[in-house]
Every structure is written in C-alpha cells, then in structure tokens.
Image (cartoon, rainbow, N blue to C red):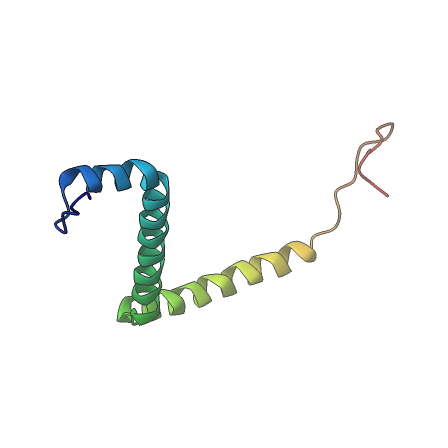
Length: 92
C-alpha cells in the first residue's frame, strides 16, 4: 500500500494552483474590486463639508442672481429684425 504524506508538498500546491488558477484569480479580482468600492463609499459618506464649500455656495448664489438679472434685461430688448428682402430660416 502507498503511504500518504500528510504534509503538503510543493507538488500538491502547484497541482492545485495549475488546476484552479483562473478561479483563484477571479475570486481575488472580485474581492479586490469589492473592497475598493466599499472603501471609496465610506470615504465619500464620511466626508464633512468644509467652511470653504459654504463660502463658495454663497458666492454662487450672488453670481446666479447677476445672471438672472442679465437674462431679464435681455427679455425686454425688442426682437432682431432682418433688412427687407432677407428671410430668417429659424423664424416660425
């Protein structure tokens, strides 16, 4: 009868790796991606707003008001008229 060596020899390890190398790679790859997604999610969820963000928000609201005022001024300007003999292809 053949005696079984209970120690894992390098040959057994290489045989298992050769047989399941694709499965081992896929499992490691998917687990690495999952870990990266979890870590990035935790980073984005735990970030607290800075005081600079609130300052830029107040500056944006004032600049938005300036833009809105300019748009309202543009609405009061009479429409552009073409000289006689010209046709505007974009008019309805």
